[in-house]
Amino acid sequence: MKRILLATAATALVATAAGAEDVKVGVIFGFTGPLESITPGMAAGAELALKEASESGAFLDGSTLTPVRADSTCVDATAATAAAERLVTAEGVKAIVGGDCSGVTGAILQNVSRPNGIVQISPSATSPGLSQVEDDGLFFRVAPSDARQGQVMADIISERGIKSAAVTYTNNDYGNGLANSFAEAFKAKGGEITIQAAHDDGKADYSAEIGALSSAGGEILVVAGYVDQGGRGIVQGALDTGAFDTFYFPDGMYGQSLLDTFGSDLDGSFGDLPSADGEDAELFQNLAKEAGFDGTSTYTGESYDSAALILLAMQAAKSSDPATYKTHVFDIANAPGEKIRPGELDKALKLLSEGQDIDYVGATNVELLEPGESRGTFREYDIKDDAFETVGFR
Image 1 (tube, rainbow, N blue to C red):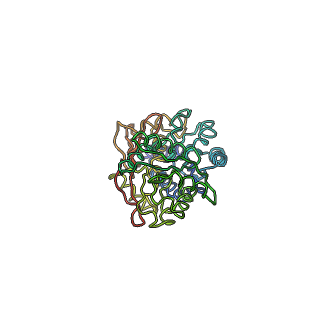
Image 2: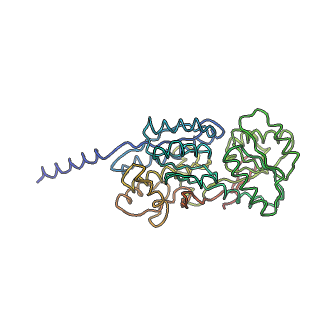
Image 3: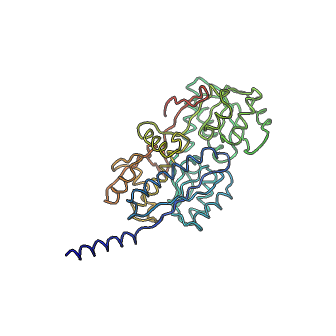
């Protein structure tokens, strides 16, 4: 009898080993380009979820998860497409976390993810246009659309008694979509848009743009740009000439590098970014701190959640095949089921392996709406004494 039991145990071990695999997941963000100061934290967030699940031993019969990084550049669609193609063809990834910026995210989706049948979840692509794209059920995003952020911006600015605003935006899908969304919402509240003008990234001199913005006037300058590129150049020019001294900064302009560059010159300015509040957000921030990165940085929590949704969908489907697990993303992101908080991926994996339902809440209170995107929560902040100070959540 003992020999039979030993033989059975050995057979089970062989079966487990045979069923295990190393599942590669692409992590494609702009490690160079206009958001290069915040993307390391985003990558760390995604990789934290993959590491947590891999080390649990509960993922797909003991399978492991390996992140593979690639550079989207944020702004160069050709470079982003080539980088994503390498992830799929050379590295054999079974999913993509990314991209970061809306234009490159759409390019990766249409040129790589759809042709190769790869599930893609973006933590930060916010263009309203992505809500209408053909995606074959492969594309999701944890970040809310800028159609909602524009309304939030209009609410915040109007409630502070500001009646007129000049708007400058980076000349791409993200900037254009956000500027249009805000302008429409602000006008509906009786506000005046004195000018709505694009700026290009990568320029050494923004004097012409500043001249036009200054001539139009306005109580505040809304900068829908990038913190490490043209948006920073616009702010520098506005401060140097005295054209504006109060700014509104949405998500693309939020980052420590902004404060490091301008310091107290930005005191009195304010803005917003997608960011959850409450115990789950604090729990994630503690996990991030233990892992050596700032969990309050832009889109770190969303990156963790994007990776978590992928691996949990795989577990629910009992497969790393995108064609099989893509239909499970909505199931694990929404009720019914036991709520799963940051740091509870081991628990979630075990529940799914037992055939039970979960409701993944994660770091950012995930709840997916059709066509595969989050309504989201926004953090309103002031800049005071060279620091970002949270005002509230919307």
